Length: 577
Image (cartoon, rainbow, N blue to C red; front, side, top):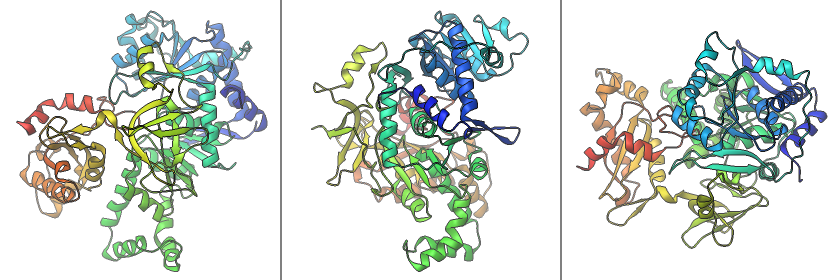
């Protein structure tokens, strides 16, 4: 299977020319693009890139939300011989500039004016950037603001119809992309991945999770992240399966009902929000409806009573997810076991997996047949996993990155003497081969008493509480564990109304003794299930959620701990003073 991503795509396009490759929404309607139409656009764009001077090995960046143009850009860049550098849209102008400067991007494709403004701020610091390709209509005066030539996407494709691209010899071991890590525990690094890295991993994953010709994927995780790039884009596209693009995270519940996908790639936070909404609806229903629901979730799968529960309750819940969801895959962070079991009970199996950008990304995943709650499954075909004496997860395989771009020092640190990639995660493999990830090595909290504490384990417990939206545990080199907590203000409002108390803005409620006492009661209950040294001794309520806009969350909604600690330094010190 030594071929390239573009070769694989062209083969599938010739096999299914009329089949719908992508669905995108405009003016409230989903429009299809066939594989043949997609191929034509890819060839036209590749030819235009070559006309613009893109040669083999040149870096071309994409700064855009998920849309068909992202796919055309990605495949077109590779077909022209270029290397794709995806950039997260949630990054600030400085972070985007740092990436473009580091990779020496020659061209950048930008989707909208807001993102374009981020380029303008530091454009003087980008000597290698020659041109900007803009997906929207170029407004009057825009070219005068930009120091770089701005080209119209639409006009380029129209011009590309007349130009033929010159085929470029590509090898499966050629680098096809440089993906910059999220930087949860430090500075982002450019991960160099090859065609074979992706294709070998795609093959290994589809052996574990077989796809059907009529499957439909709903894509909403950012394509700039490696999980969506492989699992939500390359895998379906290279199998001839339709991909529909969601309008965004907020519109996801509506898009699920419109598209009716069979497969969804997601992160734990999204499943948590669905779980919260289901229980909110149950708690707001009549006493009889609530009683029926609780009866239903307590029935044993496969029993006659479960079939009744399926008809009365579970079928209706699944309709909120589109009604046809066959498989949901969760990655990017640890999924709460109770949530996984609840979805399994209502008829949606969430297959939890594990991987990193450096492993393109899948190392292990649960399968429909071989499944164990609380684990990330068995390692996929071709990938080897072993646990070091320090309990670190080590990996070898065709999916492991080539190197960090222009960073030999960090590349050397990433591999041990025997060539095993050091993931930085701690975990263990049970006697059936299932891998459990305990936490990030660098995120482990060591209290001043020498006790090791895994923050994610405690945060999962806290986040399960209906009155909590987000939590971050702290306590490294401190005497005790503390937490920053963002309450679920909707639930807090319901509590206030129910108890005939005044509803106020979150800014005021964070200091309200009634709300502090309410959260203290909830924390006391959580502490009962934790060891004494893991218990939360103090907490601080925050009125605003951690967000990607403030760089406090990665694109897959993981906490950027060092950023959050910096933003709330005063509040943290207040808990320990």
